Image 1 (tube, one colour):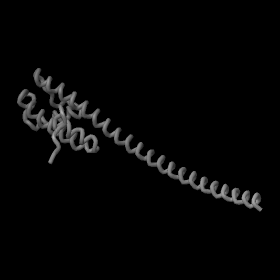
Image 2 (spheres, one colour):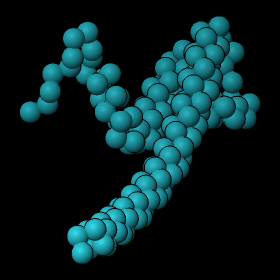
Image 3 (cartoon, rainbow, N blue to C red):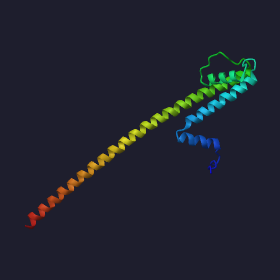
Length: 154
């Protein structure tokens, strides 16, 4: 049974937090991008039918704009079409920035994990060396004490 959202939190926000924590954010980003492209393609076709001859052409424009490529083969000329275009550009830049940050974070995390494992291994080696040295010192002290007892008690 799914856990209800925390106080003042939405299900979407909880799912997003879990996706980021589990490092499975890319499928969510890709899905959201596809949904935005399809939704915007339909919307822009309805807003500017003269500029976009079909929903497919609207989706093509949305994908190109979200990817910040902007070929210019299809562009909105109506004011509302340009408003939608501006929003799509902002979403595309935000998506790319978030994707870049996520991938970079994963690389840094993997690098830190490797460094931590190496330090832990070296720490264990050092602890083992110290314990071996202490054991040798204890044996030498025991031998010295035994020699002193023989010399003094003899």
